[in-house]
Image 1 (spheres, rainbow, N blue to C red):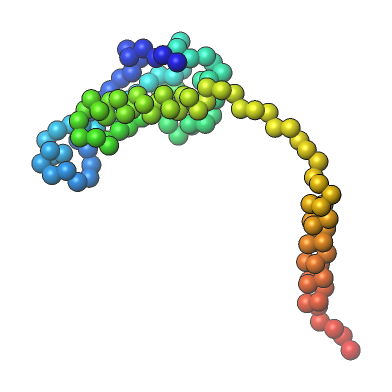
Image 2 (cartoon, helix red, strand yellow):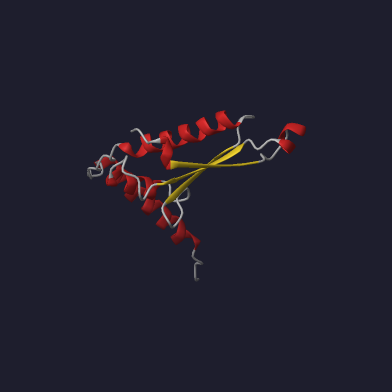
Length: 131
C-alpha cells in the first residue's frame, strides 16, 4: 500500500526523558496525523479493520495519531512514524480467517465431567453431618 506523503501532517515538540541540553533546545519529537476517513489509498475493508483493531490510535473524527521520540533527529522520527503506520496497515491488510467450529473430543468431555464430579464430591464432603 502506497500512501502519498501529502496526506500526512507532522508537528514537532521537545522530547521527554534524558538527553541533556540537546532535548532542551531541539524539537525532535514527531506527532504524525493522518485522516483515515478521507483517504483514497486504502480500501474501505482495510479502513474498517484498522479502526476496529487500533481504536486507541484513531480519534472520533477518523484521524490517526502516531508519536515517535525514539531517535535524536526529526527525520529519523518521521520515518519511524511512517514505519509504524505501515506495520499497523500490514497487520490488517489481510482479512482474518473464519473460525471453523469443531466438536470436543471424547477425552476432553470425559475430563470435564470427571473434574465436575470431583468438585461436587469435595463440596458434598464439606457439609456437616447430623447425628
